Image 1 (cartoon, rainbow, N blue to C red):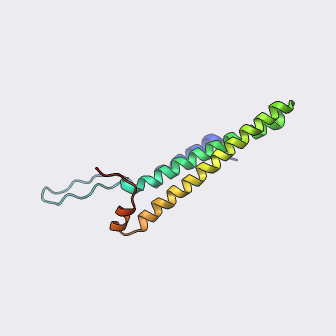
Image 2 (cartoon, rainbow, N blue to C red):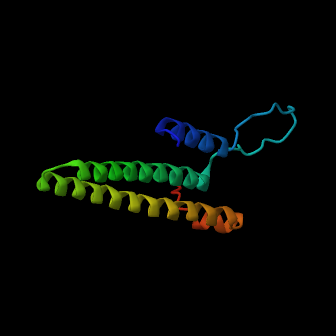
Image 3 (cartoon, rainbow, N blue to C red):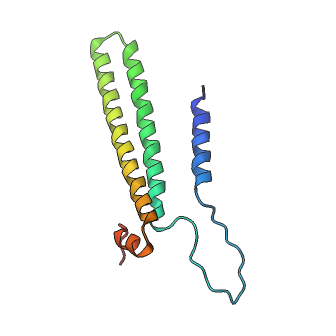
Length: 127
């Protein structure tokens, strides 16, 4: 089985390699300027979805730990309190998973829409 550290390293590698590389190539002086590549606009939804997913995984891990701790306690009062904390952490993890899914789905819809429609459907505020 993987240890917690190796899972975190694997998660960081997947997230890092999944992000587009931002490399600027030299251009000729008379070449037209291009739009900057990388993360911009609605692509932040994918990053936010990943952060929310990691938060949900963290709360899920805490819920599992509290549940395991409740099994080892001998006092009924302490065991009930630990189970209540585990349920609260599990509910928070479920909400974060749902919000992460909605956020990634929103980013995917904006990615697949044509550019004018995506600009109209974008939730960014312009002055």
